[in-house]
Image (cartoon, rainbow, N blue to C red; front, side, top):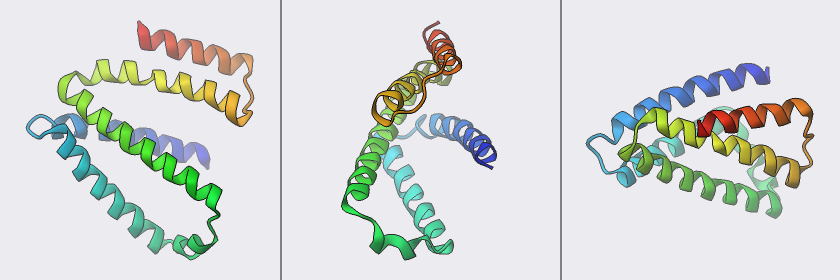
Length: 134
């Protein structure tokens, strides 16, 4: 089932990039990011309430909350940088460079999370990096 979710994520990511680029053609990228964030906020809370996920909010421990706040902060930074980059550059160039984040994610997950680093994941990471800088 996780594979279906990742395919849906890829589809939404592609649609997001195109919409972001179209959204910053006549709007300040910082304002566009702020509007996007409000939409994400509303959709996230509607989904959490509709699925009954809010019942567990009192059970979130401090460590988890800290990491969720850090992830949210990083997400805000990503969103702001994405809109600014797409306001200036082309989508294809942007995507080639932003894919370097996958390489960094693989390295960080290996170093910080203890995820396995196999020959296949190593080769895949090298190919992603090569494709990103080519």
